[in-house]
Length: 458
Image (tube, rainbow, N blue to C red; front, side):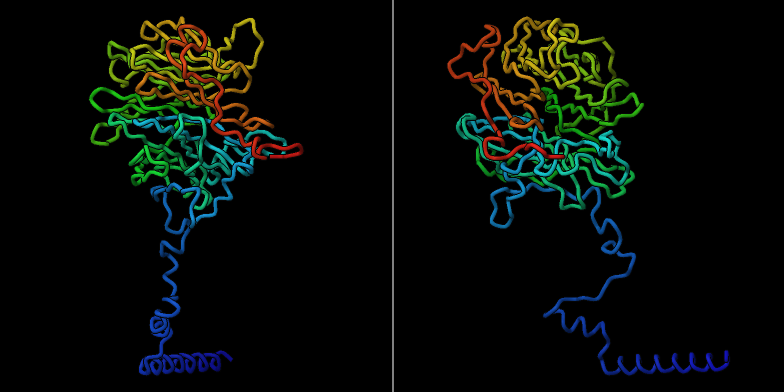
């Protein structure tokens, strides 16, 4: 039987060889047929199994550039970004072009509530594993206003979901030392990159911020953690200091890192701050008049912790709990105004105060005359609950624009709001300037049929 089988195999080999030889002579191999038909059907011959196109992630890496999508585009269906489908939005940023066009950006979802983590069936938070991106279903929105914030139009989206199911975290707007508006986005994409990991920050630069639909530069890779929460600190020599969040709920004491960018665009790591009780550090930065640096780090259920540096951020010394006691477990922003005064914006609900209000109530602007040591002046911007995540910019005429969110996933809310105020308003404790406005609407999906509905399980 074995002898018979071997005879068959020998015959089959000879037969196969003769057939192949005949096909070669006749010029009719399958490969040549594919190539011959390439003008009609394309080259359909498959590459080797180890080719980059055949192995996950199929040619996409952590360094594959992201892109911005024009919402009203003939080539793209904008329905996935319709405001009447919006069920969550928040964490806004605001900037202003030299000629007065306003820009705002925030994260949103038309699929589910805010979710930086995956929850189990009981609603308990599960830290994402290596193959599970955070902020599932989220995208970034960029909107603009040409009438000083009276009306707004959503014009661009940052939506990396088509890149292997990637997602978007916070989106940042800031103005560089040349006056150009830059857009920092964060993409969460699981492609098994051992160096960059799942989270990368990228930056676009607007080429004409006075246009409703400006062109953008090619995206530039900034780093492997979240650099899109706090506006960078700009030094007189054109260099900038960025604070980056790790956003991990673990036992590591490092929750925020600082990176320096030179005027030529080169980036280098500078330092980190040990603060084990911080989860979302969101370290706001301020350069004092003597050249030293000051930062505050958001703490879990507590007052922010303050640090200072006397070597341009290379090392940090802990000062202690911030005074005043505002912004408990919520984002606070700091910045120097053109007048030299220091602006601080946060929730004016002290932890030890007599008022038993939700911590994220009473969005308030504070003003300091002594380089941030004390903040004797304040103006209440919004007295309601669930107001958070402020951002500000200042116009050439001195007016201050502050964006914040309200009720990110609450029924009838999830608003993006704006205040336009002056330093005189803050000093007076009320709006006294002719063009000041409070609680101005940037985006309110509930007014257009959107938002969370009764019975939704998101």
